[in-house]
Length: 483
Image (cartoon, rainbow, N blue to C red; front, side, top):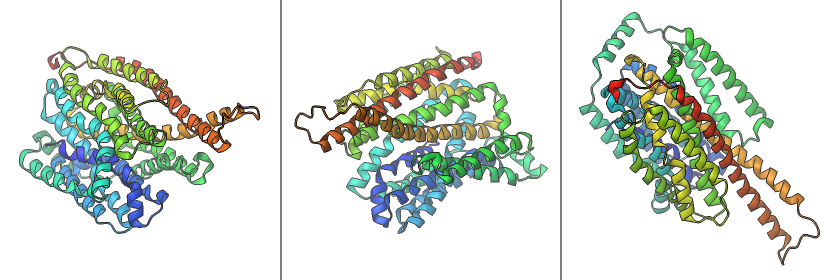
């Protein structure tokens, strides 16, 4: 029951992507303006997520979780009934604020509700929300948009949210330790960190807009992009120093002194980077070069999601029992890296079945990272800090995903230009056209250049995965009783 609302929230991060054209047409907005439907959600989500652990301490974790579910559900209905671009952007901001607190609160509830030896299996079930939902979003969004209307990608959240609110209200109770800690904190007097809140909003808000608009605004040649970069660098650097010494920080950076948590946070960053960037690449490749519609492109990811679901219980079962988490994570990162590098040898003759197998190779080992890292990150963590730890580590994953998408988008553009220039250089007045017009030749050159850029990006992120795995060997093993 705890996982219902987070699944709904993660689903919503990708479900609207395939419906932007329909939303823009319905609301009388341009295609570029409609991208704010995505950006506004991500910005508000990135602002609330890192401080959700602190907010849960202040208002109570169960109450905070219920507020988040209610706000997310209500704002989803507002999105569905929006009659203008401004209205849906405001509704998406509210939706992002509600959704940002769901995953950390749910994850800390799970960590507190089960003993160490049960956490791998629990996080295996919770892993569906992180791994399956992003891949399901484009498929479901495309089907709902094509067969009903774009409004239904938001309306489906209403019954789900109501069910989640009901079940949480009935079956979930607040741990006595958290109730005691909250009372003691309020008795000491709540010293609101206004400056820290400002730095969180300015830093993470600017970072998300910077990543989302970097390629659209021509990178660092745009004064707006340069300004956003300066704002997030200065704000986040100041935030780290300020929060480290604050008695009641909104973001507890001191948790990074715990070795397992620090390493797991970095690994979670790369989980987001690798998973969301590869999730973006395959549908984009199949639509731009192979002529797939949005629903078929989403289906190319479906078999990978099914295999991941089947592997997830196995990963939860063996983690800690038979194999140490760090060795599972090292194996998974190596497998993903090798798989991505092999994908760099695809050809334009690739079939739908080939793409499905490619996706399986990219995600089959993902549960062997996500479950061990979720379980290992709480080793050595005081129980009262579980909420703050969950907020920070989820923020690391979200930032990794945003940076990964921005990175592959920029690399595709740059490498396409590079390959196009090389191919054009090889064409001379004496090049045999075999009856091909110059216009057809130009299209062929562009297609080859774009496809070569995809292969380059597969190779680059594969190498990144292979460079990450050695750090997991420094993780501490779970206590013997956890086996």
